[in-house]
Each structure stands twice: as C-alpha cells, then as structure tokens.
Length: 194
Image 1: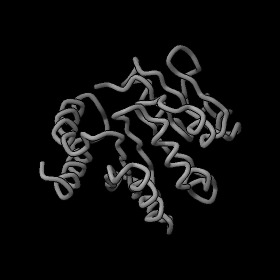
Image 2 (image 1 turned 90 degrees about the vertical axis):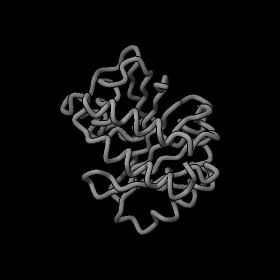
Image 3 (image 1 turned 135 degrees about the vertical axis):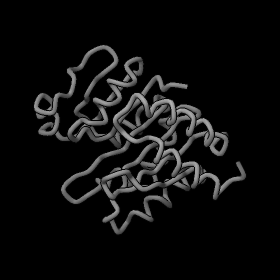
C-alpha cells in the first residue's frame, strides 16, 4: 500500500523531500524545519515550491508531531543541529508522540549517526515506544544507521512484501533498494520465524 501522508522532520538539503515528491506524487508531503535559514536555501537545492500535495513548514518538529496525532503513514526523522541529533527529537516522550502521530500500520524511519554515543539509548527508547517493532540496518553509503519502527501487528509478515516491492522498485530508482531490503529481511528473520 502506498502512503497517503508523509511527514519529514528536518529538511536539510531536501534530497528526501525531492525523492518523495518525484516517486510518490500522490502522497501529501509535509517537511517541518525549525531553522528558517535552512528553508531559505530551498531554491539553491532545487526543493519544489509549496503547492497541492507538498509543503515546507517553518515550525518545531517536536511540536508538530505532538499536535498532530494519527496524521501520517510515514514519518521521516532527520533532524540535526551542529551537535548532532536535536535533543528535543530524542526523548522518550517524543518517540511516544511519533507513535501517536502515525496512523495504524504506519512507519517511523530515523537516520541515526554512528558517531553519536547516545545512539543505543535512542534505539532503546524507540523500541519501548513502538512495542519492539523495530529494525536497525546500516545505511548504504553514509556510515549511519537507519531505524524502521512499525505501528501495528503485522511487522514480521512484512518481510516478503518489503523484498518484493524493493525488487520491483529497483528498476525505477537510482538507489540500490535490494541491499536494504535484504538487510531488513535478514534482521526480521533473526527475530521472527518467517
């Protein structure tokens, strides 16, 4: 099932926003960026203008997540400042709000810095908030880790669907999705009998 509502906390250079706009044009996409100076660079990074189905909000991502329960099918978390991940986006209550922000069967995707000494604490908090429906895999090129947390009871059964969808999508995308799909399935097979 394709997501209908996607939100991203942290705009950065906009590569995820542009990817979602290009490959999921029917989804309502909202990027929430707290720093107006980052948003001011959107033309330089060729981030599409606001319009039907696409908007960039200058707002606090933690407040957005807290104030919009059951809004999104996918919540992308990529909020960093000069010191790494923003403290407000790493608390237990924030992750609880992420769970509440998602619709049933929604997915939280978090970019985690390998160099962050608190990464294991963040993963543990997310596991608690998402009832252990969490998989962490190595990112393809950046050296970071990508965490997937699922809101629902079908988490282990998704492995085959993930692999099949990634296989079909690989022909359409520049990003190697097969490798990531294999990593997800490998992790799921260690946790569950598939």
